[in-house]
Each structure stands twice: as C-alpha cells, then as structure tokens.
Length: 161
Image (cartoon, rainbow, N blue to C red; front, top):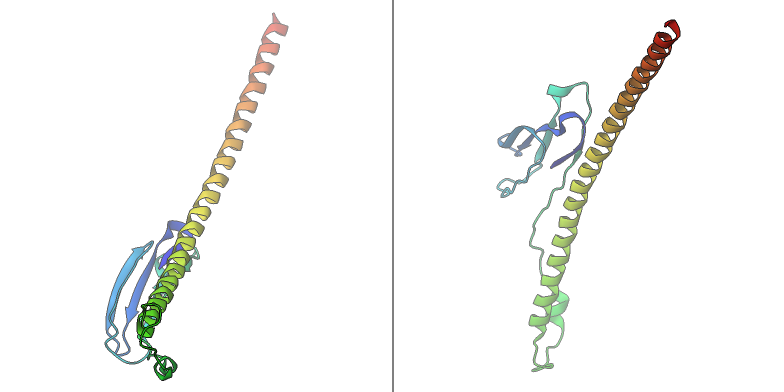
C-alpha cells in the first residue's frame, strides 16, 4: 500500500481475516508492505481509513499478490520423453520455464510498485512547484510595490525641495 496523493500522504490500514480477526492494523502510514500466510478459507477484507482527514481525499495504490501453487499441467507428463534430448530431460526444461515465468511475474509486480512510487514523487514535485511559483509571484509583487513606493517618495522629495 502506498499513498500517492493527498494532504499528509497518510492513511489508516487494516487487514481482517474471514473470521473477523484483525491481522494487520496501522494508523497514519504513508506506505506499507505486509506478508501474511493464508490460514483461513474465505474472503479477507482490506480497509483504508481516512477519517482523521475528512476534508482531504487521498489517492492510494494497493497491490495484492497471491502466491499460489497451481497444479502441474498434465500435458507435459503425457508426452513421450526420449532418453536423452541434447543432455536435458523434459522435466528440467519444464522447471526452467516455470522459474522464468515466476521471475517475469515478480518483475511485473516490482515494476508496478516502482510506478506507484514514481507517481507519488511526481505528485509531490508538482505540488512543490506550485507552492514555489505562488510564493515567488507574491514576493515579486511585494518587491515591485516597494520599488514603486520608493520611486514615488524619491520623486516627491526632490520635487518639494
């Protein structure tokens, strides 16, 4: 879970099991990573709480990764396995393909999390740019006003003498 946008960049978070037991509970966090073993069958609830900041909405990135061992595809077992195929057995090739598939899935999940961090950083950058531009404009207007007042006062002083 990662808070991307909103004032304070923090929310409350809870993970509740199907039996109603609170597995994870955090208050006012901007990010979090939790690993939980599935012990009960059923639907788990994920709750986000922004009640301490009712006037400001938040944008939250959340990803649930379910690591399940799928049943092996029986079509591989039905193939006739030759004694030697270039020094590799069919089971070895199958294991390598499955390992590559798992690594590609993990890479995709990691990239999704990194994109969420990038989105949060971009939001903060744009928000800070707006603040700097606003206060720079105010500062410039004050300086111009003071300059005009000084020119007016100097002109009036020399006219009166």
